[in-house]
Length: 195
Image (tube, rainbow, N blue to C red):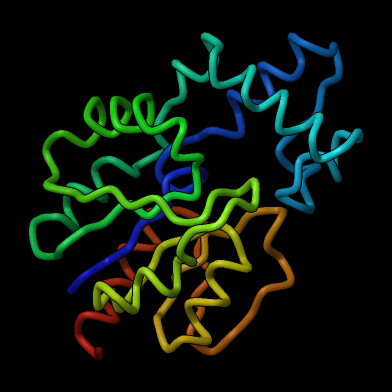
């Protein structure tokens, strides 16, 4: 099976490091649970442009360089890679390609995984994750952003949605909500038995 896997908040724990950086920069302590939206400016205030500026500063920081994997992500992806064709599909800005690919090489060097950049989360033009999955014949995506999971689900692509504070309202018959990688693997194994 061809499987698309999101990077941030599914494979890499970007948010924890971003919030450490934000605290060092502003002195404001914000927790992941406070993010009822993945539009950071909706949570920490300020404008969208100010949030993008902070993200670019974060990209150049020690905190960004120290992003760790989500618990059990690496073992799970390596396990899936034994029997499936895997694609990291990320909406990280293409400008961050070098550090993104170094991170993937560091943690996922055992997997033969392809990296695809979709339209980035700053709204620049590109292909949607649903369009990428359709074009490549990907039948399943593992995601944390509800809008991407829903676009895929509406395009008849199964979506495993990691339960996060910012995606609570998203539901669809093609979306399965999970809380961790163990649950994700169990759902994938069910799907592979009943495609």
